Length: 478
Image (cartoon, rainbow, N blue to C red; front, side):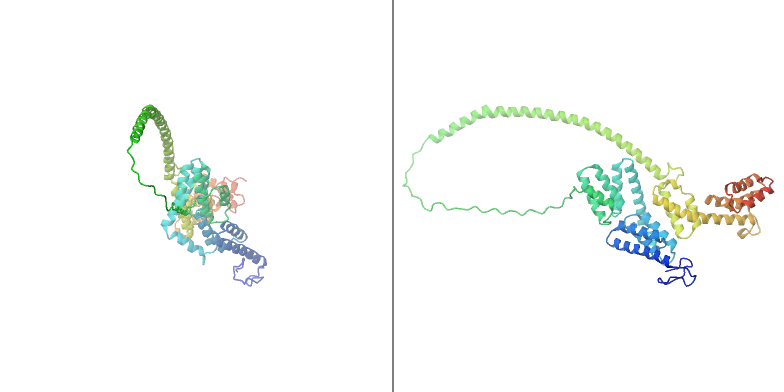
């Protein structure tokens, strides 16, 4: 392990650093406890207990934020769950704490090496946010359409699957509840202990997903038992029969009776059926006409509803294209700027990252993770950019550095004002702005900066100098 004071390599069992003499017993306990939580999370991740692994890794990082192995594993779990922005955030923080020999470099490079995949993740996040917005504003149908696309892009995106299942459950339709349970079963394989997934599955405990039924075995029919008749019968002597007219009479009588029955019973019944059929046809025609009129009214209502949705979607498209935003930038442009700022920060170009972030309206970021990333990079890069701009402005005022032998007051004002844009509390930049305006014979502007230092920053080391300059202007009163 490394000594927390001098960063020298020390054997883990030693109680004191050989280089600086720092007591390492408490620090060793902290490192050990953090590693215990990391090892527990590693075991949980192997059995797909991702929720438990996230909890253990957060405890490990809370104890020791420098445990880059734990932070890298947390990023991998977020990536597995479809949380791409959260994963990238953890890897960037890991790289900040350990710049060399860090697996986070490999993970970030794999993402950057495939622009099409990175663009797919970006589109997936935008569609999920759009679906979440639609669901929050009561447009469940549009939310379901968007979430289906998100789930097709990344079937392991747990939050998207959970939201889609919840929307299916809210319809209270049997087929949609079956779809919801199928979605939950799929993501339960990704994270077996996710409490939200388990709670939703408990709500769907009465739903059974149909499976292909096995073909029923055909029962064989038993062959009929054929019993042989009497083998022998008494043979009567042959006697020629005389022809008889009775069969012919019987047939004739049957025909007459049949015609009478048909005339008295069947024909009236057929006529009655024809009348009933005519009435039924007229009734059906009337009902169809009424249904057609109702369908026409329904179609008119649906047309008005669809037109309202089209207008709403057009407004959303205008917002995404930036025509309705204050800055003129679309939501896509803002997130592209965030990714560009992250790349500049990774490449250690703090000034470029600060210039990009300065043009971003942080209020337009709908994702909490994106806002968190914005604040982290801004806090790290704005201070650096403010200092560099101040130093260049000071050199332009003094005629030093790149401006040696020639003072450039206009350039000094430009750079010092830029320094205050990055850090409004930079009293050094305020003081030299006052000095520059004083040299340019603009006492009112010079006085405004001296007064701001004295009134708003009484603990600043520049207060005494600001008071001295005010006395030179004959305007300092204490």
